[in-house]
Length: 182
Image 1 (cartoon, rainbow, N blue to C red):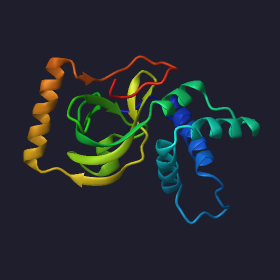
Image 2 (cartoon, helix red, strand yellow):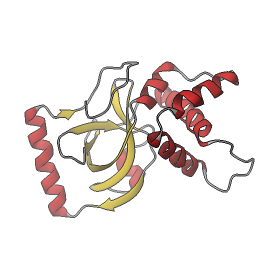
Image 3 (cartoon, rainbow, N blue to C red):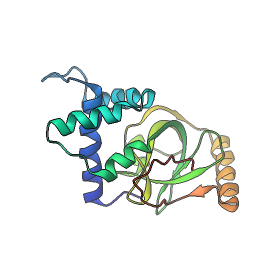
């Protein structure tokens, strides 16, 4: 349900460094919580993907190096209003808003159900390819709970996607740009 502890720590540290750099100067006593800063930085990055290279250069100038696998994961980031259906023993089931693909997604340090307080919701979050898995970036917003009919409907969609090969639970680790919908 979650990535290995050392992989999670490496991702969280690198992702935080990059996103804080993209966000810009953070005062010593910021008015926003770190999670809000990360969400704002993520939104800036999604709007302008070139900010990653700028942020990496600025970090390098400060002698801070982000592991290449974390950089590759950030490049693969897809932020959408995903349908989070439920947790299984091995992963959390996310359905692309188009209904054309579904993913078995791992949390970084907690199960998704524990992060949002239940199952069956539309959530805005980021999904990356990291350590051979689809992984949520842990920043969740715009939560809307699904009624039982919608949950049944999406369960049927997932069952169909499993049969047709549209359900993806793992991905090859790569340093190339990937999107969860590939």
